[in-house]
Amino acid sequence: MAKRRSPPKKAKRSGAFGRFLTTLFLLGCLAVAGAGAYVWRYLDTPYPLDGAPRAFVLERGITMKMAANQLAGEGLVTEPWLLALVARVNGAAPRIKAGSYELSQPVKPLQLLAKLTDGDVSSATLTVVEGWNWRQLRAALNRHPDLRHDSAAMDDAALLAAVGAREPHPEGLFFPDTYHFAKQSSDIHVLKRAYKAMQAKLDAAWQARAADLPLASPYEALTLASIVEKETGAPRDRAMIAAVFENRLRIGMRLQTDPTVIYGLGEAFDGNLKRIHLETDTPYNSYTRGGLPPSPISMPGEAALLAATNPAQSKALYFVARGDGTSYFSATLAEHNQAVRRYQLGAK
Image 1 (spheres, helix red, strand yellow):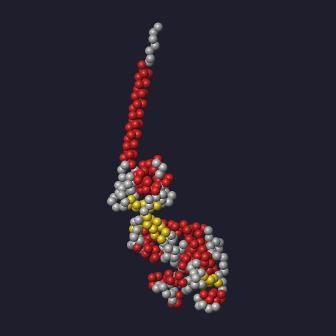
Image 2 (cartoon, rainbow, N blue to C red; image 1 turned 180 degrees about the vertical axis):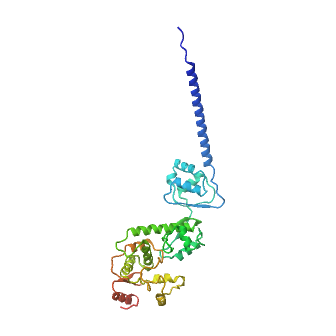
Image 3 (cartoon, rainbow, N blue to C red; image 1 turned 30 degrees about the vertical axis):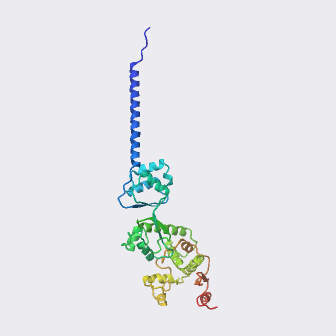
């Protein structure tokens, strides 16, 4: 009986397939080794830094991918996709912290990620005080040693355009708060943040406003809030002071508030308000003109915004300082005159 032979073609096919798998495996190993070497070289190479320290800010809510792209756009890192991938693999991605950072020397990718997750920030601050006017704010910006003074040569119109403001006058548009920023940030960047903050606070106050206010727009609310800010000596009086001015607006009575007169005098005011000042007409003299002034007169805080949009329920038309920071409110002129004699003239 003849012996059966194995088909030679099948054996040849099996041998060829085996060599193909071996080649594929070797290519895969080479690819993995090459990728590993590439990643290792990336992790072991410091990012270039052009001599001088560089600062950057990561805003609240930023993702690792967004941060990597931002830093690449600022010329601080290379291969942002690889930085984001490494951060995701080693668990750093969800732990990066917002803040102002400074790089004083070249760092490797893992050193940078450690800095971002530790919140190793380097920042300066600027406090915008409630009740400041625009002139005071610009002076604070111009003398701040840790800001880049990009707005110093700009007039008001150019600066408003730079921060994206639609209003024609800068007064009152920047929210009083403490702003943290990377050293040598642009002063325009700080102003943009303050402008956006005021827009958000004003919009929230206007959306929650009381019914039947004698105010036609958020800007009018901002203007009234700026007056309330300057007139308030005790926080508990804000809503009542707003009520007085809004009651006057309803009946067409002049506001007759000294802070508007002082604002209209500008730098000419020497701290001594005289009768001649009250009688000299300017666009901001609320003794000679009815209604609200043409713009805010200060930077109002959130409490003043809320008072202007939700005043106290009162019929008061007058108030006078008691001398202790608080005010006495009256609904009639006779009662007001009596309060003036008592609290300002010392009569009993």
